[in-house]
Image (cartoon, rainbow, N blue to C red):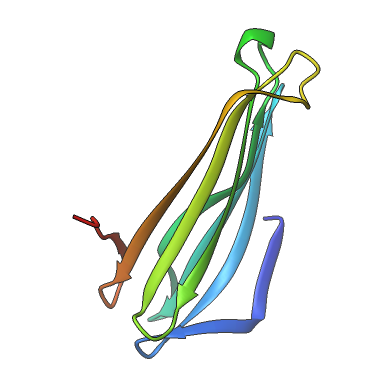
Length: 119
């Protein structure tokens, strides 16, 4: 576990959601994920998980980076998550090729954030 924020919960539909950041990886890969969890009957339940940072520098021809974040709209109980991804040059730092950003909208069903198709 990289970071645990108990001091500033998000409140959605009567549930207090806490942000937990985890880190994983290995040789040539580094990943930070964010988890929104709530407490129910003395157990933490994961309501959503997304990528904050992911970088692969394991094979030069497959170097890439992803950066993501999220925001909760309290008026609609929707979660907006976005992620920007691109390949990297062989230096493992400089962007190469097309940079793509995707946004996904989720709605809270009382237990989990579920993907909400736009159309």
